[in-house]
Amino acid sequence: MSTDKVRLSRRHWLAAAGGSCGIGGGLLAESVFVAPCLLGTTRLSVGKPTADQQPLRLIQLSDLHLRSFGELHTELLATINAAAADLILLTGDTLDCRRGIGPLEEFLRQLPSGPERLAVIGNWEYRAEIEPAAFQQLLSHHGFRLLLNESIMLEHHGQVLLVTGFDDLIGGQPTRPQRMFSPSVPVDHLVLAHCPATRDLLPSLLESEVSLVLSGHTHGG
Image (cartoon, rainbow, N blue to C red; front, side, top):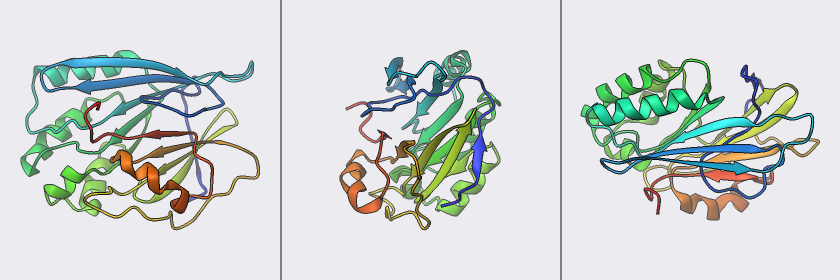
């Protein structure tokens, strides 16, 4: 794992889309889903910030299954822009097939430019025969970092968030991050994995305690 810290420039400290198990710094959850002609948004607050902390707003985008770009995606982008997120997370299955690459790039181009951007791969990227290296190159053109069995530290106003992203359980192979991070003091640890069943493997994959796991795959199930 790289120990280089990415500094978040926005003023809020923590938020997320999905369930949780005890983030200490306080999370504002923003979950946006599309199914298949309906746009829905779920907002969750996770944890309680102390007097000297401010929440960080995270947006999770999962299972877009893009094969075209239309009115619904324009509406989704408007919702994302209005949320004023500090961190945007892609948790896999961004497209259905290789012809979805163009619509995906159009979608990514229109995301707000300010937030930090992280992603993990899903089973449909593998099914479309898009290799992780090619997916990383595509994402990097739009400011995303693909976490493939990798951890990264994010820092904002002296507060540290450890983020670990895993390869897909179905199409790939989740493994222990090559370089583990054992903080000297407790830090919040966010795990990204497309398939929720990856959570069952975490005790054998990680040494650090996990605060929150964000996944996709089940389309809200």
